Each structure stands twice: as structure tokens, then as C-alpha cells.
Length: 168
Image (cartoon, rainbow, N blue to C red; front, side, top):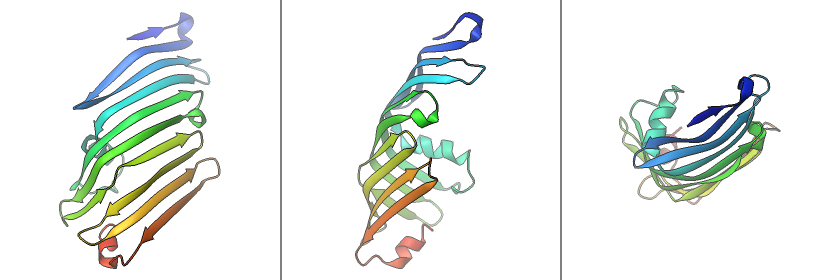
């Protein structure tokens, strides 16, 4: 349902559900001052959203993902925003994730991991990445949009370079 305030200065989104079988994204909240410096107050509940769907959506926004790139697994969690993008907070959980490039048959299997967002910063992991039968890589990321910085931590023992280069 979508409700508008007097003079269209506010839009109230009582509930919007985007079905992404077998999961969904439900968004609730309000956007004040819609036409002059919008101020969203929104909550999103992400439930069992397939990574395969997110990969397909991402392909429409970038040419960095080859057409044969596929994903599986699920995304779940909650996000909230009370103001601009800098107010975004929440936690997401990725489970049973795997990615494969159909042309090369290169495959990644990921341990379950979390993504935390707090304002201008976000973190991912730690996550264990299987790059084949004998290749195991530990990865974690931290971003700071305000400072325009990111940190990547990689950890591996005897990682065959060939396994890693398939994905670079």
C-alpha cells in the first residue's frame, strides 16, 4: 500500500513486498520531504532471497560479470535507514553460497558469512572460500565510504596460484 500526505510532501509506504521465490523482500516506512531533500525512514526484511536472482540482477548493472556467471545460496537479514544513505544500518547473512563461471567451469564455494552495515562503513566475513579441491582461502573486507577506503584480509596456506588466477 502506498499513501501520500497533504501536498505530496511525504510518501508513506506501509508495506511493499517483492517476491523473489522462494524468498522475499518486505519494505515498510516513510519518505518525508519527497521533492526537496528526501528523508527516508525505511525498514527492509530480507528473507531467503536466492543469490541466483541477485546475480542476474547484477548482470544488468555491470558488464564485469560474464553471461555464464551463476550463483546459488540465500541472503537473509534486516536493513534500516533513518535519513540519508549514511544512516543505513543492518545485518545480512549469506548461506550455502557458491558461484560458477560456466565457460571455464571455475567454481567457488563459500562458508556461511555475514555482512554488517553501519552508516558509512560495512564489513563482510570472515568467509572461507574453496577455489577447487585443495584451495582454501580466508577472506574478510571492510569498507569506509566516508573515508573512501577499503581493507581486504586474505589468508591461505599453499594456495595454488592457478586456482586464484581463474577468478582475476
